[in-house]
Length: 367
Image (cartoon, rainbow, N blue to C red; front, side):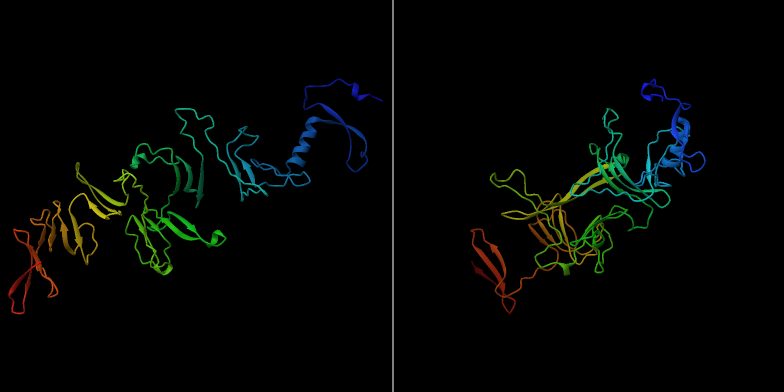
């Protein structure tokens, strides 16, 4: 009998090489010793065990018995016929990452070498594609370069959350939702950014009657709050161990830049500041009051008076940039109550109250 262990070892495998085995087919040859070529064995294993009913680009999945499941839902953009390694894997179904008693993490890594100057050109992202290939939404670094649209210098290398689609005004956009019960399906909208860039903070329920006519709107359903809950709050912290504090008191400011074609006419602003000794309304120019107004920000109705740029007050129906007196009244000024009157100071410093009696006579009383 041949001693196989004494045979020469062949380190070069050829498809025409032969191996010895036993025929397992039911019939007259069953149990006979036969030669099998390497190419025949390979073809049988790949075609019948590893890849039965093979499909191009499909990545095989095996069952518990080690046999391939026909028509895998995993595919790669490559095949033996084109010899391309491929760069994408597609799963025609859901992808579930699951671990018991441990964290589960999805990690995206790009530009491992971080070679400059192109180091910021390669970035991790997730794309959301629907409706016959529309690339509507994405999350990731530097997926958009909107510098031509006015992005400030130095704000690059940003993390983006985007949604862009052709919809009617008020549709599309991005919505953030929360709820105080388990299950994301129970969430309701809390912060909405519409496709046109206008934002709403709050839940627009059946009581909402707004029209999204501002760049940013806060909706507050008062039936859900108490008398001490405000619709919008600006909170600041200040240390007055150094007074006045060098860091200021913060507050809320509204600014508008004014131009006339190519001519810059400056920036104007109004601010609301909470303070300890006093709280302030501060403005870069004159400060006007409107009542019963149509709320038109270009030519509002209901003018009631203004504080001029010289700090003097004007009450009337027309704007005065620099009132002549500390208080200027265009129209009647009325003092109500017979105990009250107008108080004037004499040259020697005596203060007198001027009143009128029932006959219309003026009287003065030193104070």
